Image (cartoon, rainbow, N blue to C red; front, side, top):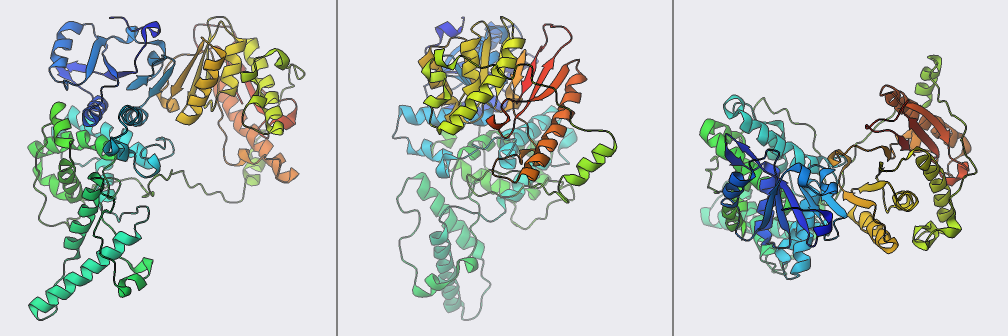
Length: 589
């Protein structure tokens, strides 16, 4: 069965399948996608399985025997039979009805499945709740969020590595698993949790009073029993979509006077805190496979994972989880939780630092600089390392804006006139360089494309080239696709993914890579500080020039014209000594 772009009529999912010793094997990322599809009872997608070998028929038959009946499995494909955009990225991938918008990467694809399920059936509040508070669960990309990286990449990779040779690794818990165990033992921070914490305090005091009156003395009081009940009731109420998650009894006056800082902390029920989210869906197939292996090869190690075992048991109690798991061939089982929850982690606890962000918070590295950039710049200058700028080859070149469709002109967008003029000046510089380098049949990639100002102009200007826009923010890419549709552009594609997921060769690429001090070029800054930022940017670009030259490129760094078109007005133009089938041109701005 062919699956060309012309035949694209329904949203399609592409996932990997492989075989080992002639037996079917689904990679973890594929198992996670199938589990979510089954949990959501989604029939919105055609599902295609992709494998590299050619024994399609026998594997196809065994594959269908292991899949949920509700899935619309269409075919088993080789990579060569995939649509062009899907061939450009790592799987899993989802392509919309137009065949021009592709979403790649586990978290991006899973979030898209949830959104499409709710669009098809708005009554599925349980599916909507998987996106969490403000619909931000796993929205931050792995490059900036340690939590997304842990769930999307590190834990699946650790489990896959463990399965390669479980008997050699069972005596050493993977750092990613230990990090998750530690996270599950940390206090929970959720939006507007004051009411639940006060109810928890009230229940603790009531339990203390009851124990004292019954025992006639001062008994030992286990606050964890209160926690286990209250947090779990709140979680179950959320799953049942109750309007009030816990008891409706109002706290007494003494409880209301307690400072927030003195209230008891909430404990984890699920991975993100109190409520079942997409993160739990991602983790369940991974942890299930890992625990099954550990139970066989080294059950004593389970004593080091009390929080993870407790989480595993709670997830199984979520409505729909057992059904979805069974449909996907996951036979969930009860694992005996150690009697004591105070086991210390082994000396092998070599976890990396993982802060506990509040829901929806994106984590970025906390960089510290001492002395500013001047000492570094002075040392580089002493070694003869200084930024070098080449003259602009065509400073007066401009696009024929008056003859271009209105949808291309930035002045038609939602930006001020001054900003629109500067954007037009930036586009003049970039398009001038690209049109000089591009040849018919080339692929031009606009990395971090935003709403597509550069890519859409290039698609209109270079009709014989294929233009691909890559952006990890869905809202921006959808706006770019909408503008492209208005212009009826046929030579443009859109990929929502992290840069690491793009694998296709290209001839010309554009992207922005700026370091801390190179960002300090804004017009509102003092002139001296802007000049320092300009020099810093030049040094960063010099390093990039050297890196490109090691691959045979002849690179120039120049300033856009006019300089006022952008505070970040450096432009790198790379040319190979001779054009080959390999990447043949590169422009950074």
